[in-house]
Image 1 (tube, rainbow, N blue to C red):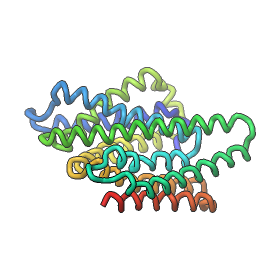
Image 2: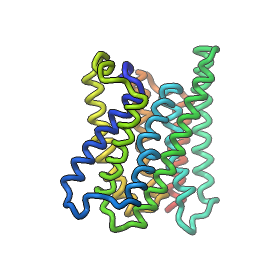
Image 3: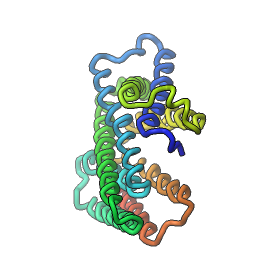
Length: 278
């Protein structure tokens, strides 16, 4: 939607809004709970890179190189990884095997279909570009999985933290990182002002920074305090399904047969994993 703007600019703008909203919310809180301790501040800085600016930048470049469908499905395996790595004591691996096989088959089918389309469109260097996009999407998946596990563990160890306060501290840390990212690798103000679709860029940054970052982080923190990491991770399924739906709407087409089968396998795999967890 904002093809005239670079991925660094889009990432920085979204998370600068996240930081600004969080900063305003911090100052609205009583002074006694306004500022984190040194340990909390360092944790917030590290988690902000894993779960926000670093993750989003990797995913954005991955989508730019490989399209939307395959990166969406790769990111969609996060619930499985969180279930495997954050599963509660007593949940046997053999119970998770059906879900893992179904999800893996769906990913493999979608990657195969997209890779074949790339070769059909251009037998030149597009295959390498597509492979690089997959690698970036995998790196984004690993980054967010680590964030989800560490953030849940932190919140469950520090029950005295209010979910909104922790979201605000994460937001401020993310905003500082986004500012540094923009200063180092972003476009200057004059260049940004000269590009078309400037207001669309602003509106996307505001919507992403407020809704998809600040509000979503508060709700996610509340869930992380009340649910196990493995069960909480299943909530990300909706993000993947909407990402796939959006990609087909944006392309103006119905899914192909292989894409229908891949998506169905993917959903069945997630449902099987939830059943095993129960």
